[in-house]
Length: 280
Image (cartoon, rainbow, N blue to C red; front, side, top):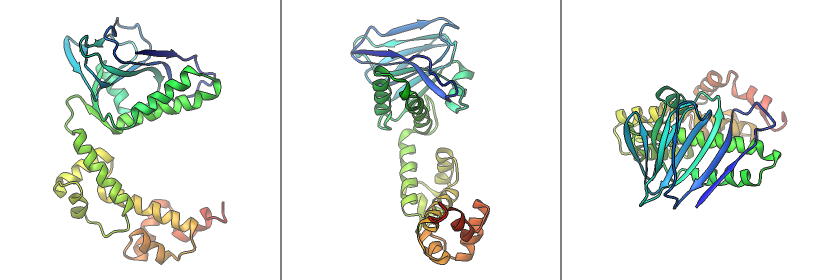
């Protein structure tokens, strides 16, 4: 299968990112590209969901199979292709953006970024929708096309690692699953030790991994989840501040008020007045 489509330059020029050319190749062993320096003036992202292929970079042949991907920056030399006997199933997109995302910055600096990603992270469906809108293009689809590309990049940011990265996808799954449980049960009496048990790691390693993967410490994440629940209760119920503190996981209402003021810049009652149902 050889599916591809070009998109016209968008009428609105201020999108943070926008696809230019995209496609899906499978059972297409002839797929091979070799582009000289300066030829392609857009980012080039490929994600492999099955089969095998390769990329040449700085004299090295890098094997590419399921769960592998590569990103070339604008103007980079590019050489890659499908394996002839086990052709890859690859989704790809050429795009423009000025986003300061780490994976884009890494591609710019190294002239080629090679990574592993989670094939179960929902990226296939995002590509499929982007392709469907592209092949039936209407100007009203432009915002959604931009949003889909942005979601792809952010999903990759959260579900990928450099080819020789220190944190495996299995570890990332474990930490994110722990974070999901903490979010659902944020009113519980959590400690660092009980949070660490969710993943099977020691408290020390859990703290380090959680901060790397989630971008914040477990305790800060727990506080953010509790505050989010408290804000919802403030704006949608008539519960007292003491009742809300208890339901959100704060042991004392005085501590809840202190933390709420620290993070939101106002006490809970003032927040309720400003954002409660009657205020909206």
